[in-house]
Image (cartoon, rainbow, N blue to C red; front, side, top):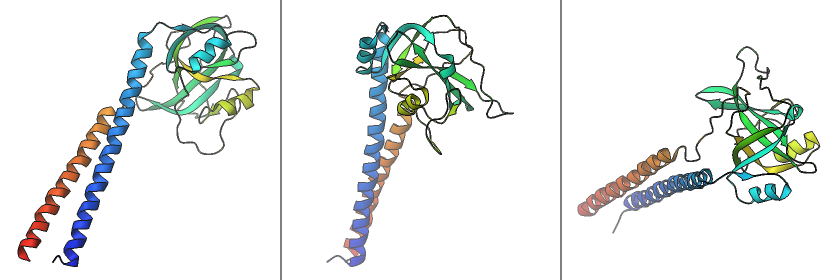
Length: 237
């Protein structure tokens, strides 16, 4: 008959194995999700750009993200927002988001034009990001939203100012205009001096798989130790 101490040790071993295995499974799923998003991204990049000239085109893009797109329109400079706390190569800065007006009566399309470093001397100083007043051709990848960061305080802000995150509803409230429910990560150069270094969707897949291997290894070690010490206790008994 097993002593209460041995029973407790066996139950603790079983619980440890279950916990380590579940954490390994979670890390595996996270890696698989990122790999699947990268496959979607690569497929989108392999296709010809979809012209966006009217509301029907925009609606079609919303239903099939991510998607390569191209459009001709005029940037609404005064409606630019600067999304804060975005790192590139370890340097803090802003992602500069400006709406583009493609056609009359059509919602604005938000374009993430690229990244600019923050001034170390004055955190509130906005980077120069000139825009031509004439209509421009913009190419890019339409994605569901600008990646979110930890937000402290109220969402949104004023047009032309610094935002912690970009929220469609908050932007519409600030601008008084409807916007399409996607954001275009610009890829072509329009002479604004911004850096366009878009993160790959599969960033961190190897890290997740490495963590999963560690958790599975720990589960295997707990099994071995539980069997060894449990067998030893039974032999003594």
